[in-house]
Image (cartoon, rainbow, N blue to C red; front, top):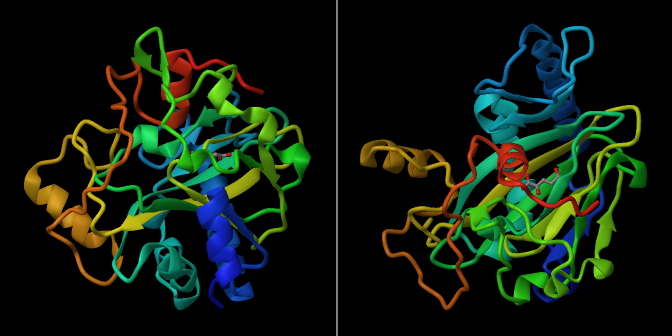
Amino acid sequence: MSLSAAQIAQYQQDGYLLIKQALLPAQLSALQQVTAALIADSRRVSENNAVYDLDSAHSADNPRLNRIKTPHTQHAVYWDVLCSERILSYLKPLLGENIRLHNSKLNTKAGQGGAAVQWHQDWAFYPHTNDDLLALGIMLSDISEQDGPLQVVPGSHRRDVLAHDHGGTFCGAVDPQHPEARLAEAVTLTGKAGDMSIHHVRTLHGSAPNYADSPRLLLLYECGAADAWPLAGGQSIYTGMAQAEFWAKMQTNLLCGQQSLRPRLTEVPVYMPLPPAPDSSSLFKVQQSGGAVDGF
Ligand SMILES: O=C(O)CCC(=O)C(=O)O
């Protein structure tokens, strides 16, 4: 499997792709099993921690999660799938031979009201020296209109980065009324478990609450060309690290090829995510505490 020339051209034009049955069946079922076990384990947890971002209605009887944090550090299967030939065959045509993971997350939007993700560009959270970065979104459950699927605005990755602030503070979301947001043009990415979306780091996207009964499981891997270096001051997994830790993490997160000590600088629009929202501990907290305007 790899991407066709038409898929590569569509990604460049529209800033997203939807690939049917992107995984091997064994990869999908391994991911689903481990994910079900992690969700079951959250019954023992009553406060956000290094693994879980809990929905406000979470309880031991009724586990409700916004997110499993950095799944690639919670179980080897998430890392192994990402580094598999199958997944690299989708990444390499878009990012080249040298690729680093920026971050991973498993957004397990709980059934019956699991939170919306307000409209944003990932680039606003973690600007880099060039914008050869993207997010893979692997569906671990069937995702219909009811489940709060990812929505993307085609072509938005080729326009400017929009302000993501509320009253001068970073809130991790755009003003949905901003004329350049063009939300009326949004496309909804529904699919079956095993389907995968890819969106460019500058593509404007978001998702409505989950109105279905079961959780909506979307496994996101944010990856970039190894010569895209994070800009200090962005909301980054590297923030606050000592240099040795920063370097070790960069090494650990290399998926294939070589590390680059010569960042590639291109003419990219950058808007630093500062001053920070009162709570920067996750995208959900940034949007809630920063006063993001509801676009759904
Ligand atoms: O889970 C979703 O629907 C979108 C997630 C997202 O955009 C993010 O976590 O940056």
